[in-house]
Image 1 (tube, rainbow, N blue to C red):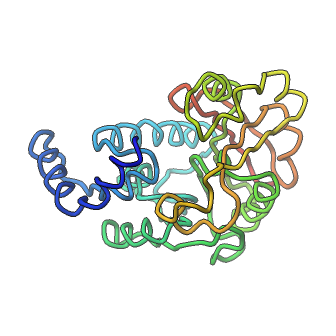
Image 2: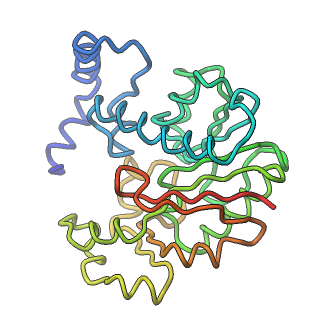
Image 3: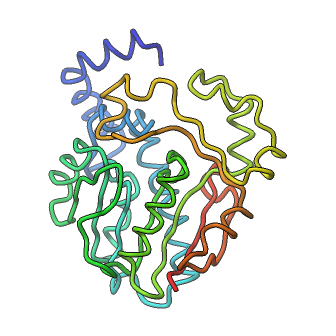
Length: 271
């Protein structure tokens, strides 16, 4: 989006966004919570219909993985959405009946979750661990598009924290970007991702994981709300994950292109 247009929209958002939301409700019959534009914008889901449809699709990927690897009924589980944003995926787990919790680095997203889903424990976290949860508190943690934006050091720190808060035998479901995403990055025209234009599949195979910080990180407090550590794009070779993410975990499966043919699904079980 053109920066001038974006500034104008953000400056007047309190006027037009409630009207847009109401118009969408009248057109679609949607009665559930719809987050404000600023929260949708931070996760790249400005369009309300896309926000709801993509959330349902990504929920289905996580839910299907739980059906494959978890014998208990979801209603018997405690589940954490790590990096929940404004509940794009989280809200679709509510009818399943698990005990839900949510964390996100963006305090405005957590403020929205408190208002929209008061029965869910929602907590703002820092860019680095720990989380304010007890050891072995959860049966499952899922994270969409979190490890896709962390540098290697932070990836390792957060994996260790997942290991701390998950019960023995529990599942950690993580989305990553692999070769499909690398092709899109290489062929894309986003100026923030120009570092990727020369990265080949062979480069990723040789290095295992590659990370580039966004060049504007630290210059836009709205876009990077709550983030104090590095933030950019990370891409992983699935074979690297199988080798490097098995400290305290068993890598059960990696489904390439699981999320709308873009991000991969990694399923870990805590040993």
